[in-house]
Length: 347
Image 1 (cartoon, rainbow, N blue to C red):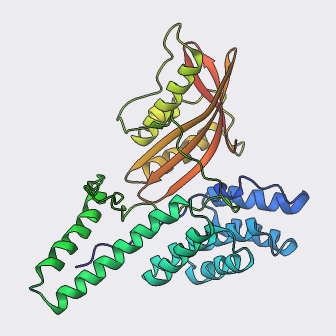
Image 2: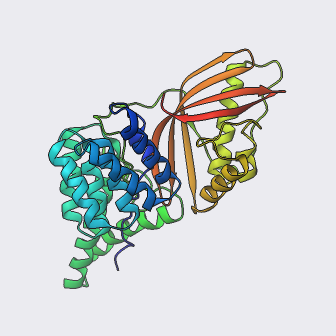
Image 3: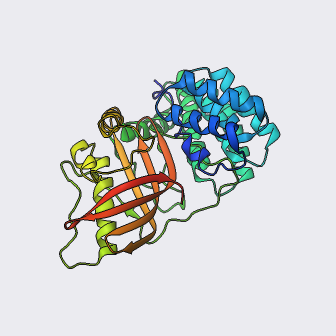
């Protein structure tokens, strides 16, 4: 029996939209509004706005990419495939449309086309880690099918039975939230995880490889942990880092109370909505996934008096979504704690 179908969901369009700046005036307003509506899950209005934008700038890649994401969320797979295919034809140097095509093909069970699309993504951008990981998942699916077919033809094929069992173990380990053991003494990379969130689209530009920084903080889930107070008399820069790590830990643990406690009372909500409405939305988004894992890599932390600005590379993984983005967080000191006052995407 084959493992469950590979699922490679998409990251929020804001990753793609973050570098927007080529359009001005009303069209750009339509695109920004479309992005906000997409994030809020209002797919119909988002599509209307992005279509209005594309009427003015029909070849512009950012709007087209966002339209592809909206269509994907609406389960209009064939229409989304047409959008991303058009992007690969007009902008063959961009790896993200190829990656998202692979995601769509995989959702249809067409792993051969998914494999080809991912190979093109890697050809255009060899350091595109997401495409490499997704390609590993495709190989795992193809291997599983091949071994299963071999056993159908020869039920006594012990070698095929062992290999199929190994592939299935990858799926089972991922389902339990654990990783398979790395391959021993063979020089091979750790087996790719095969279920969970894959295929996060990045910006629609040739992405710059961003190697992990030495200060990368792996945020392990810790149920019930809240934002950590700064140590009395300690270094403020370290205290800011500690506070954000605790914020990410609470997020990873799906500890809504601890997560919300990391924000200042005068936190500037992203869309200017009421604090209560924002908290309700964040609570739903944290509680909806079965698992969440957040990793922070600190690019810079600057402190001036009772205020601080931290730029981080945030990697988010859940059973429904995977994304990588740069965030700028402004914090204020309240007593002996640093709290988030503003949060925006981009450096």
